[in-house]
Length: 165
Image 1 (tube, rainbow, N blue to C red):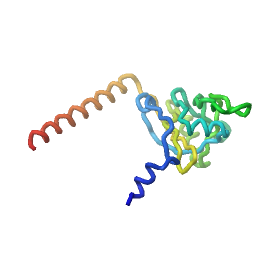
Image 2 (image 1 turned 30 degrees about the horizontal axis):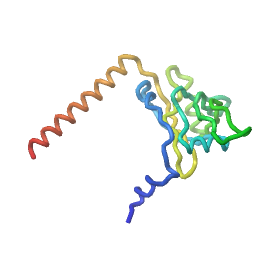
Image 3 (image 1 turned 180 degrees about the vertical axis):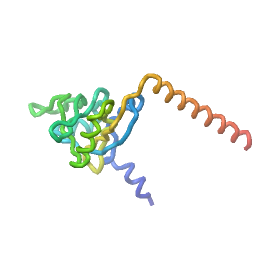
């Protein structure tokens, strides 16, 4: 009998479409939000085919609404005159108190909204949005050094375990 978690993992309605790995390298992630997106039908079909890129994406708050910019969702191959523009700005769906909190933080210098991933959850397209602060070059080097140190200690520990039997 399959467990509930295994069932959810294999469910095609819960699937990762695109992730922004560079964001975690370039920014310190302060807080993460799961939000819905207002999409056209051809955009949803293109996302189901896995045709999206978050590389240059960012979000901002305008007139009490959060908008996603520069996220590239490819045009749907079978779309006709109803097709969408690949880099149009898209409205994000968040609660009012979350938007107010984000707007307050964005007024401070150094904060930005960065998309981390697009995925389907229970058949609906969701975006993982992060409130982030940019890293300096020395911070990036420090992060890489810490990651390398963790790897080396894990290797050493596993070698010791193998020797012990």
